[in-house]
Length: 266
Image (cartoon, rainbow, N blue to C red; front, side, top):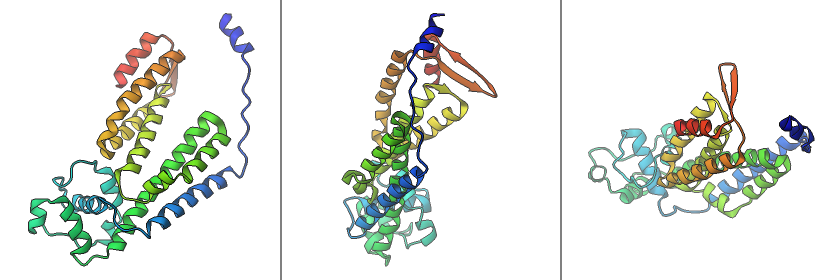
């Protein structure tokens, strides 16, 4: 009776309906972000390790060879070099002493400037793929902020993202930065949703994002303390854990039961 009364007397929150022009505004900001990031990058030469990332990524696609430059994950290397599978630039042969010795930075220098490839074309193809990662990150920022603050908060957050000098810089360069930003945000969001409603789809989504996060960069291990903070916040909130399976659903109200489920998920 006390629970029923508390629910009945709780103030209702009025959520403003999203206007019809919202999808167009979101698309405008995302396209604007992509145009700014890509157009700015076209006037800039190779950064410190772009040649290495692109050469090593293409080498992985061609030869399934993981010897070269293992400090960073393979996600950005493979993603940024997907266009090369179509354009097929010239690459070092496996009999080349440089390939056999696996000198990473010389790898990149030869690939860009020593084999007759067009460096500007190689760079633009890779950077265009990074812009897509930036667009995906912007969409996640909007979606997450909209869920917390409503459509106005989502649109404001997306606007701040689209015009952020940091996000524009990372979105126009082949590096691990945008990949780790995207996957860390996606993995955190998936875990937070999973801690509230347990479904098979959310479990698989969390596992997929966590796997891609580990492939993005070694700093992905930062997700472990983040998950710990999310678990503490979840227990402090004290809400029941919902579960859904094959048309059935239920709730786990006790903290001990929730702790057992979360331990299994971990």
